[in-house]
Image (cartoon, rainbow over all chains, first blue to last red; front, side, top):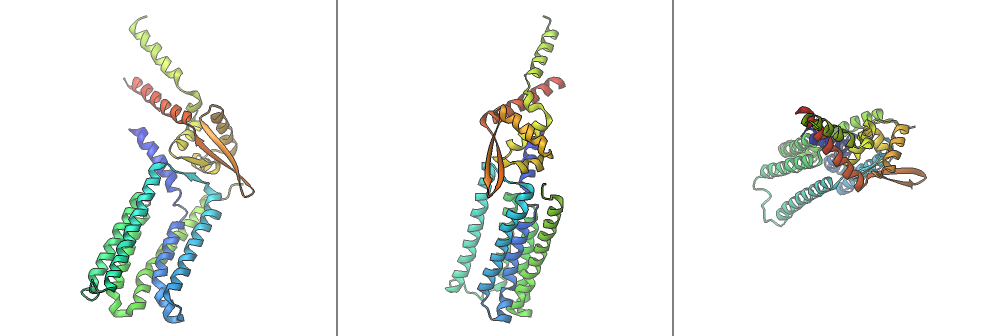
Length: 205
Length: 110
């Protein structure tokens, strides 16, 4: 039994080493930030929020992939995991796909007036917050990435903050407060992990 | 032969049957790490096992000679890159080693 646990722990330790560089956090931070400051950029520059989403998301992905290629791989090397991990990754992809479909369906049904938008907006806020909580928690579980549990709370709280602050600060600044604030926090957590990672694993001579 | 002596001889047989190639701590460390993943490169193993470049290199060669690991050398850009993988023989040998060690410690506790 002890042997079994140790082998599992070894595999887990190897797997978790992929998340210690903080690059996933940085990517997630950029995603949250793009949601948060898109409408704000549109208001002050006139550039449609879709363009700022794309720019910020692209920037996040570029930093993620360049970071993995030029910072992580030269420091801790490369590893391929077994079939169990591959299946878990597929499960995460399915969960994400279902979540996106759910979101799109909700928006579509609202657009074609099958779901009246003004029935009670806070109900939608709660539904999307619960959706985010479930999706991120499942991802944290299947990816063995515990920080995602905290981020699931961040994401859900962001949505609820947006819903409650919208009537007070308007539909531009509510997202800045909600997604923007947590986006910065997640980004900073990622940068902190990245700094620690670079210090812990210097480039091999 | 008395039953007591017979048991002693059997215990000795168990010990001598243990795979000496895997039993060495550094090589066992490498085998365990390769057992839990599909494949890993030289640097990853060095980080995970805390072995030095020279140590890992020499143990790797011994494991390769025994047919327990497969070493694939390639170039990524202009840099050499070494990927390591446990062979079927190595995977089987490691499982056998675990069984033998379990058996050995069970016998001691009795």
